[in-house]
Length: 89
Image 1 (tube, rainbow, N blue to C red):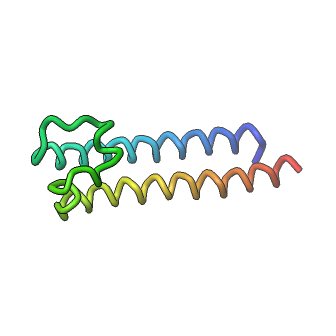
Image 2 (image 1 turned 180 degrees about the horizontal axis):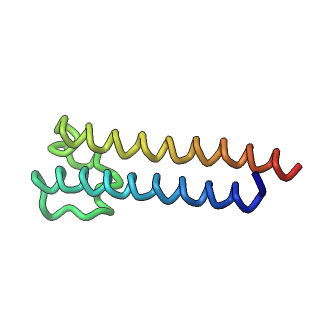
């Protein structure tokens, strides 16, 4: 595998994981807005300020899924960078 091929794979994986994360954040946001329609995406960066949101198991599930996808994105990127560094060396 060449450096260019590895970089393309990394870009494709990151794009897929970003799309999945964006979709999941939108799901969590829509669940939160069922209880508090006025909340913005910025508000939901700190959902602890809204007891009715963080006490909703459906919201917590959707938000947890988004956090898991973000963690996976970081982990995959880290591993792919290690592979890319080995190819370059």
